[in-house]
Amino acid sequence: MRAARSDPEAAWPPPISPDETDEEKDVRLEQEREAKRVSDAIDLALNSEKEAKKKTVHGAKILLLGQAESGKSTILKNMQLHFSPTAFHAEAELWRPVIHLNLVRSVNFILNLLAPRSSGTTSPTSSLPLDDSARRLVFSLAPLKSVETSLTKRISGSASTVDIDNKSTSADTPYSHYNPAKAPEIAVRSGAGWKGLLKFRRQSGAVSSPEDMQNRRIINACADDIMALWRNPNVQEKLRQEEIFLKDQPGFFLEDVERLTKEDYLPTPDDVLRARVNTIGPEEHRIPMESSLENGNGKDWIVYDVGGDRSQRAAWAQFFDTVTVIIFLAPVSAFNQALAEDETVNRLADSMKLWRMICTNKLLASVDLILLLNKIDILDTQLKAGVQFGKYVTSYRDKPNETEAVSKYLLDMFTALHKQHSPSKKRKMHPHLTCAIDTKATATVITHIQEVILIKTLSQTNIL
Ligand SMILES: Nc1nc2c(ncn2[C@@H]2O[C@H](COP(=O)(O)OP(=O)(O)OP(=O)(O)O)[C@@H](O)[C@H]2O)c(=O)[nH]1
Ligand SMILES: [Mg+2]
Image 1: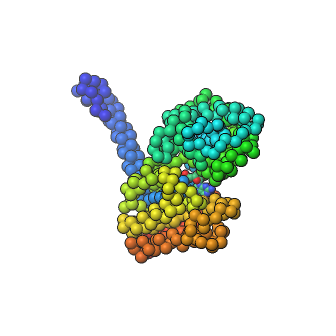
Image 2 (image 1 turned 90 degrees about the vertical axis):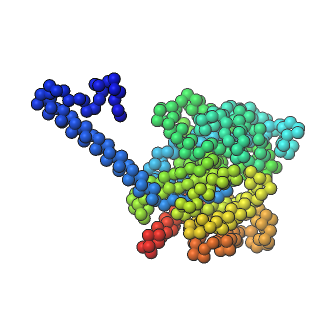
Image 3 (image 1 turned 180 degrees about the vertical axis):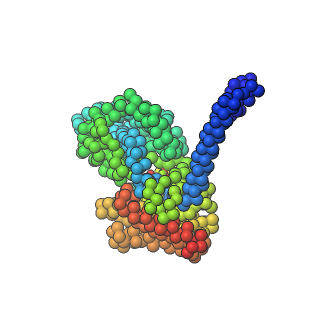
């Protein structure tokens, strides 16, 4: 930094006095040598930081693609847990408010469902007469509405979130966009952003602010009533009538209330994987390898996580010419669902259309594709509950309504699309059937992705 002209005292090195003695000269020269040592050390540190950055920039670049709720961010969490377990566990606490918000939103969704609706609204079918205990629960759980507002503010930095159509949804009137089939989700800009905000609060000691403590006290005090609400026959009947399967929805924690509401609750890796925040805007995540043996070439992975909602997809293409592999997720359990952003579009048909577009894209002709047919656990539950796959995918006709046969059929369809539309015969596709909330099974898939990346890197450097 240059000193101000008017402040000769602050100049460095200080001007040499014409009357300098030999002793003073020795001191001055020693000071100058020390200053140079410090300056060199700073340069060295800056250079090694630059080198470290350069090194990691050359690590594999992985792009996660797929429609909203396909499990992209969940796969990212699995990678973080797999390669950087210490950092993952250290961050677990940051997920507590998100998990509490997921829980509180499910409760408020049910309360809203039980509330009498005025005519003229897009209300669900006729209101059921509530029994006394349900009426009491509606009353006693009312404070959770303000907890929802407060937690949303803590996580997103404001009381309102962004809904999937990018319309602002005020948390003060959380039911103005009432969707009878689905509990509302947390949609905050950038997953990295909300974590940064909570990290900052933790570092500045504000993580246990009076508001946080108050929220946790209310949730804790409501624990028994939340459990009673979930078990209440009126509630279960209402959900059945409306064909709402809360259990299969993202961020479902109503069966973990006792554990989640304990004073000393710390989210487990499983909880973190099941927590739901939808991604808005592309995010770059650097995954440091805590053990150099973890990754064949010892370099960090750069993972791009994007939003899968239709309004977010234009941002995908900017990564196409730099990525090493693409991991495409198709949630196979979505065969009987419509897109949240367009009720006329079936989610499985949308996934297949996206897959075909990725397969066709010439920029990706030499990018290996890893296909994850995800949420296989939910598919299994649905088929076992008697939901007929052939009713929604008519080309399936009357083949067995069983997980193995259905997943094979889907695998064949996705493989055929790749074969038909790939610009290069040489391009490889690596399919897996996955349940991304099962960390053990997903670890095997990650190991396979590592191998694909390693082979790709070696073949690019002509070693293979
Ligand atoms: N049961 C089950 N749940 C899953 C699976 N994969 C992901 N989930 C859950 O589904 C929800 C949505 O997953 P995300 O990873 O947030 O989805 P996404 O693709 O990142 O969605 P966007 O960010 O909106 O594009 C989360 O609550 C996950 O815990 C799975 O295989 N089985
Ligand atoms: Mg996401």
